[in-house]
Image (cartoon, rainbow, N blue to C red; front, side):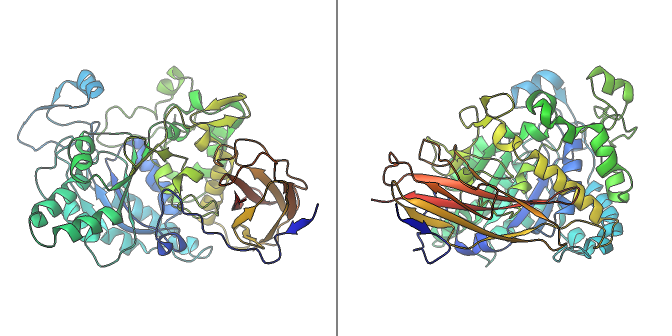
Length: 503
């Protein structure tokens, strides 16, 4: 059979993803706004976010409330949560576990102390002063409060209406209420006016919500019925890989990456003031304003069978993992899967993408399909990457590791035919001169071809496979090139080939 070597010219095939983004949205840094209620896992997520602040364009940092955290109005007004579990747990309250509206600035000040070292390792880290200029206080008085404009909601509104057409990823770490208030303000200002149709389309095309659960009722009650074409990425299961329940979700073989030993060696100690402030089980630290943050008490840790310095939670980190371009192309289509998880289009709403119990990857450790594994599978790479970013805070360029640069020697989208032999070719280099290992693998759950392909020379820069004869026209096969360097902690980067079967 005649071999087709993809190193040479192959016709570029444009594959329109279901969750398509404009070309400029996937070729550069993503614009993003963070909204947060300040829970302990938000703080740890924020610390890691700062170490990756060069990978995306942060345009807003906004304090918001949630069903778990709100300030109260200072007048003794009482409320009961609209969320059944919280109503049962807390009943009627005037405030709830409020961490204040200065904690982001506190961690930006700690970032300022490591910033001079971070910029030795990569370009694009925003200055501490710039990050502070992006902080605003949103709707914080009560869970779901969206009755009035705030500095935070006005700031979000301004960005959604600005002249930049590129998407704005709205990370919802707490409740959706401040974002909902921004949208309500836009609707109140323009609905019924001649320009409303254009404004509605502009905002709907620009705003992309990445939500980790619903932490108030404002999305369901206001955003969904009034802005039905705003895109939503909804993570309800996969985030548990990086959240409080990780010991129940992460396979035993991967749990060392979340253990106290790993965090003590790689993150907490010897990596500067920002990471010294990272919260871990049994660390003796206490989050201001939250009486339920007892994780630092070693006796409390023992109650939950946790060891000292074990990971607590970064439940919101997948929202920004999704924005880091490591070559997996998941920003083109979230169903491709990547560091921020994998979601599929809702049958009820074509603008909403969800994970859930039906979105599973095969877990090779438990040998079962697993709803968390689309996120869990990246834990070794993500944690090693985190450890290297921690090193960047204190080490010289020569002492630290830096990611390999991985490219394809052919198009990332190719046409194939049943029975055809396909040759894949990758190119990689390492800025530190480290040895590199290659691994080509089929992401079976993502491709629409239901069978497996046997990849030959999968550990070499050039690999090949024969297209199965039962692969029908229109079906796709996703093949990932994974390249890892030899330094410790190791770093991994990728390229993805999407092969589409044609007649």
